[in-house]
Structure formats: structure tokens, C-alpha cells
Image (cartoon, rainbow, N blue to C red; front, side, top):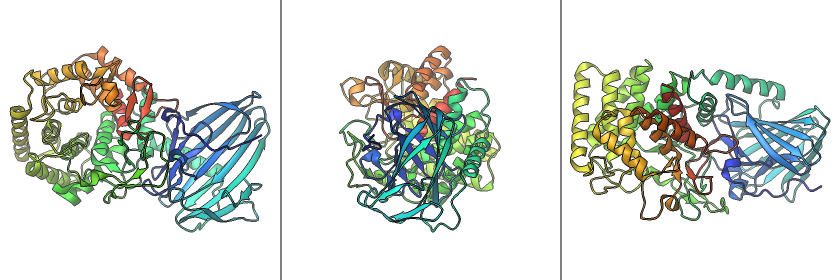
Length: 582
């Protein structure tokens, strides 16, 4: 039978993520690891069929099959599960060895013949540098371990001693037969350094990975969706490096809207997203991801001060400029890497940083260095709060209402949680000035907040200031803003960012899942518990079998849009699950 045919792209809801903190991989229903950048998140891809590249690593039954799968609770250990047309059941347990080594990715795949015999085809054809580097120098050692190179990466594959190398296609191919109940391990290593030790023993690698996840996932306490809250935490941990930076997503160029040019590289760390994640974790307790978020943001604030960039690489350096790749791209998408965000100013990042520091202070997680970052962020707000910026949605430079009010919220919260009395008074006075100035030029005649002094539209971002304490939840402006957002931007239980034009909301873009969870928390804050739960449950359902969320949801087609998985959506789910349980 023909096996391992050229992979076709799948809808985003069908991809699973495995990640070890230093990099992540997407697995499709046919057992193809369709995306992996190595050795780091923003490195060139070595497996890239997601964007039409030629690098691939697939393991799947030879027979026709139907697909399913699930995560082992509290981890990013994925189990692909296939039922073949001869009624056999085959599973492939898959993970990146965890926690990850910054220089070496280790992909663990364990095949199991759960019922009946398993006939499986495996294909390994790494192609580094987004497919431009061939798989070369391939040879098999006496113990059946394959080694080779692709670009700057060393490759080592254990568990397929009888594979055959096809030099023309640059692929190792193997067929495996498993008796009922039998298991078989494949271990792939990709490193930017020479291998200085023998291949890992599969049992030891699996044991260390299981222990790593068990020790990483905390007891989140009671939420309204315990399993999904734990999974959201696992996703955020999988996206967080040992140095503390949490990338916004594992991918680049997945389209928010087909052929509209709104395709971006999210393999970097957004300061705002990192703050969202830290505050979400703080809502559930003083767990490790709160500390890593605070450390990463504090270092960026201390280093760059009022010139804080909106995003950084996971190593804390500047994001590279945007450029195009020589790849077909995901259908409807493009092929860009790098990001124009490097050239933006985003005022709200300072407010979010202060909110994060305040959340850490409430859990007694601020040391002297972190407290010093508070002073730098406050000084930056005082200096720049009247400056135009790109805002939460990274649009034209404007004096966004949300950005100014979030800075006021950050000042109030950090004054209450961490400031000496003399500084607290000054910080609250500055917050009062910002709110009064914003009310003077950005309050809509209806009594709600509007986007900017010149733009009277409502915006879902305007929920955040009241949620974070810029003004009380029962302030008439807060009440009117939530009401307008639910009326004007809500459809079928989902919420859109803002109205682009006179078209129906769903024709301009997808619903924003972040906005859905923000609206649920705002409704809960204002006492509408049933409405909050309806919004929470509706948006919680906007995922596929692996339980991952992208940035947008196409309500009409019931499909996910944009890069995957979107970290701040998982953060918002976690925070909402914790807050709605109160």
C-alpha cells in the first residue's frame, strides 16, 4: 500500500501542539509534524509542511484510518489515535522531551498496537532553513542509529534501523509492524551543536518528561473549568522558555482572513501578552509562571525604560524586520517572518507592566530588583502618557483611550499593592490626571468610553480599564461601555474587537476570543453571573479536539483563524475560569 503521501494542509482546529519551552511543533491528524523551528522558537523551520515547505517527519498507519487524539492531563504529551479500516487501533504517544534544552530538540514518539496488529509507515526528511537545506551526510551506525545534517542542524534518529535512505528525495523511510499490545519507540534529535553523548534511552526520556510536567503544573485550585484551566496553563508553560519569555504563538503567517494580508509572525514575546499571562496566573495563585513573567518584563523595563519595545525575541533582543520567505504559505495566508511591531510604540505596555508588578506584590513576589522596575515604569508613564501609540490592536498611532486608562489602572494598582505612602499618593494623583484628561476628550455623548478623541466607536479593549481598576465597575462609564460592547460588538455569544465599517461584523474579521473572555469577566464583575457563564462557555467551545485556541474564530464557518496556539487567549481562559469561580 502507498504510505506517507504528500501531506495536505488541515483546518487549524485539527493540529495538536507539543512543546518544551524552547520550541514547539504542530502535529496534524495524519501524523505529520507539520511545523517545527529549531533550535529556538524564532529559528528557521526544519519541518515546514504547514506552509508548504518540504521538511517533514510523519508516522501513521499504512491502512486508511480515522483520527482522534487527546492530551495526557496536565501536560503537552499528545496521543494521536487512529482506527484503521481493518478495525485495528493504533496510538502514537508524542512529546518534546521536557523541559527543553536550548540547543537540542528531542522528539519522542512511541507507537502502540492497542488493538490488533499495527502496520505503520515512518518518513523523516528534515529540511532546515525553511526547506532550503538538504538532508545530507546520512549514515547508519553499527547500532542502527541514523545521523546526518541539514543546514546548521545535526540530526540523529533512533528506533528505525531498517529504514532506507532515498538520496533523491532526501528522506529516510521505514515500515514497522507491531504485534497486538507491542510498543515501539522512535527518538529524533535536532541540535545546533555536536552530539556529545549517546542517544537518550526512550524509557528514561519519557520518565523525565512525565516528571517534568507533573512538577510544572501546579494545583490551580477550584475554577469553573478545572481541566481546561490546567490545559491553558500547560500551553502557556510550553510556550515559555527557560529564560522566562513566553512567545505569542508557535507559528507565523497563518491567516486571520484569507488573502487579506493580515498574516504575521508571532514567534516572539509581546510584553503585553506576557503581562496578560502573569496576571491570569496570579488570579489562580502565586504559581511559577507569575515569577517568570515578572522577571522577563522587569528586565526589559529596566533595560529600555521609556523606550520599551512592544515585543522582543525570546532571548530579549530586538525582533527582526519583516521579510518574505520562498514558501507557498498556508492556503489563504502568506509567508512572512519578522514583525513590524519592532518599530511601534505601545503606551499600554507600561500600564500592563505595572498591573503585573502589582499582582506579584499581592502575592509577596517582589524583590528589590523587581521593585526598581516599578519606578522605571512609573517614570515612563509620567513622561509618555500623552504620546500617541499603536494601541492594543497595533493600528495607527493615536491617543487610544484604552492605552491611557490602562496606565491609570496600573498606577492605582501598584500604588495600593507596593508603594510607600508618599509615592502612592503621587501615583494616584497621576492616575487621576490621566482619567480626567481622557474623560475630557474621549467620553462618548452616550456616557460610554470611545476609542480615541476623534473616533467615537466603541472597542472591546475598553473593557480592560474597569477590569483592572482604573475606575470602579459600577462607574456609569464602565456600565455604559459594557452595555455598548455587548449590543454593538456581540454576536451569537462571541465578541468582535470593533466595527471596521458598515459590513456585518463577521465579514470584516473573525470574533476575537480574547474579547469574549474579557466580556465574560466584565459581566461577572458587574454582577451578571448567568450572562458571564454563557459568554465563557460559548468562547471556551471555540477550539478543536486538542483544545487549542487561535486568536480569532470564524463564527459563520466555525473555524479558527490566525496563528496557533495564541498564548493570550489561553491566558484569558485561565483568568476567566478562576475569576468566575469567585
